[in-house]
Length: 198
Image (cartoon, rainbow, N blue to C red; front, side, top):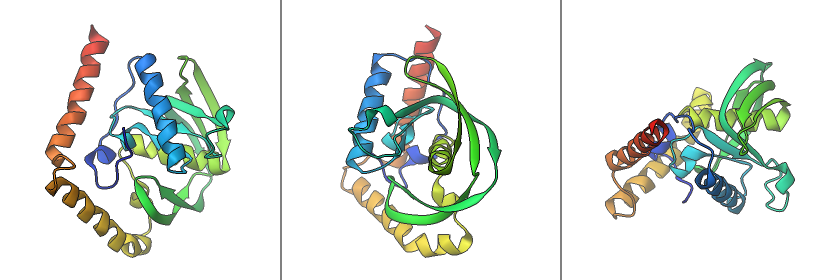
């Protein structure tokens, strides 16, 4: 498992609900936290590791030894948004790229935890911003989509470099074609549906 970078098609793949909370999912979550800490991030969505599921993890401290600050959101929904504020954001799928993004100041989010319990948080500040950023991911929306036209133009050379690196990895055989990558995601979705129906 590794964090995929833009423009990997998993980042635009709208995630499907998690059908079952089991040992495999718990292992996935553990690996996601590990990758997030290694990259010094505060949040990571499943499709950032090329898994098409409605799941993300957050630890605002970015510290692996602060386990009590870990939050896991399975099949989340944001039920209320209030206020607007602009703040700088980055993303582990866009290393070294940052930009000002407008988000709701306060949100209410509901999700399931790793024990299958439903919880509800009222969040503001960095926590609200992080949840909205990760929630966008599982909807196939990226923070660059929320940049102003001017900021997007400023980011263009960096984005073009990411695209160049992506194509180079494909040409060298390190990465499959976009079609192959999308088919792999679709196969995972089909397998989960089949498993959920059996």
